[in-house]
Length: 110
Image 1 (cartoon, helix red, strand yellow):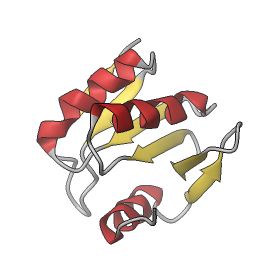
Image 2 (image 1 turned 135 degrees about the vertical axis):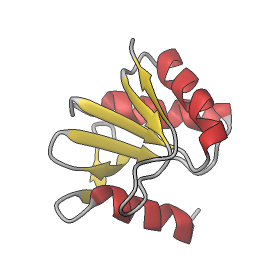
Image 3 (image 1 turned 90 degrees about the vertical axis):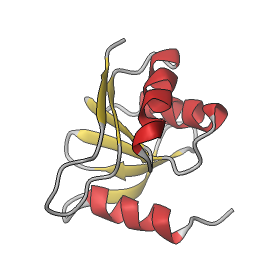
């Protein structure tokens, strides 16, 4: 299934000028965005199963900072729950907005 325009736009914003999109992970999986110390997974389908799959992709990354981005503030607690379930520490948040901070952020400790 191809990516939506919304998903591609969020990936581009999260990558910034120096980041890469669609980075390969061990096992043939793809990580949405990789910058210097950060691994970012953008998940626009917010079902528990899809969030858990995204959290597991983050866990496979060797980057020290892991971020799961969901589209709406009401989805952040579910993303944080999925990260805890997958035993991934990091941040669950809404997308960055140019010139403004994310609308909602949740820190996750394992």
